[in-house]
Length: 233
Image 1 (tube, rainbow, N blue to C red):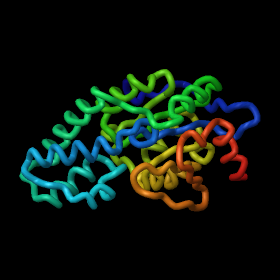
Image 2: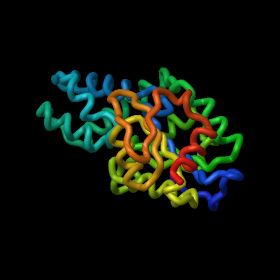
Image 3: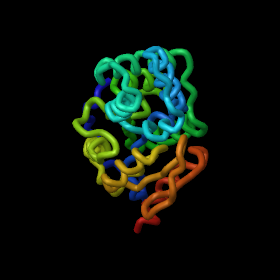
């Protein structure tokens, strides 16, 4: 699957200003944020380095180039960014090939959005090879398009991925609801002008204007997302 754009126009649910729903992947739909840290620990252990647990909050939710670059600099590991990226992606793909747990409420929310034909996109900082593996579990039919971190010149925390997703769905970013689990993803969505639902996974995220914080996707349904637009007005 690629991030090709379908001709969806700007379909909206009757009586709702909500035009599209844009969802993060790791830690939002699939319970994999911990997988990434475990993989980073394992890979660096094989390289002869021990990761400091406090670094986890630095690398969570960011693009691989940033996370891997930080860990190389912090440990002094003798490896290039490109080499490390391959090792991390290989190890992560192996991990999710064995188990890929969904976040509570994820399957129900995706089914509801599909049932009501709400244009939906998957927007992740993960690479295409990882997204496609996860999509095979989530069900690619739930998403009109997907945006991978290695397919944009600037990924999260820049707004580019969310602006690209909104444009691909023919939607106004201000009429898009974004669901994210990290501060990096929230920053990207807010910079794009979207309405944000934060479901913190590893690190806490505080409330802010235009942002709603919940504890689980089980609190989120289509009526909830439509209500974000109503409250905006």
